[in-house]
Image (cartoon, rainbow, N blue to C red; front, side, top):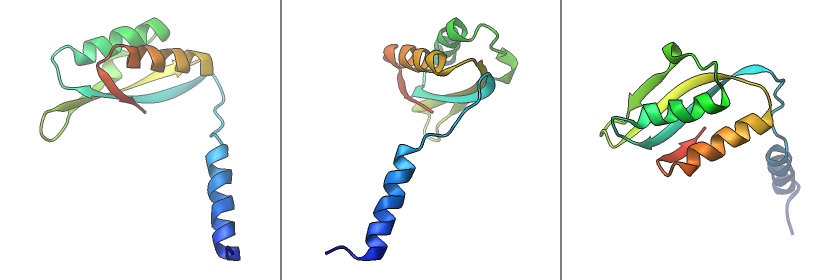
Length: 103
């Protein structure tokens, strides 16, 4: 038998897992792309991103190496127009085979 406290905690977790943050489009949308470190990794990320967000501002892009230099993260912000745009961008980034994670 489950205690009331455990049941309440489970219910809170399930409610939190089902709720997605609401985004009002269009909006500025920060993205972090993580992959294996390489000289051209940031260029590949930017090339793919520009296909989905042509107004990408290259001046706002940050490339950060991991502590041991094995990974790189590319941080950028786009003007997101809708969920379909974001989904297509994330899928194309992952399809490069060079991206481990898009946050």
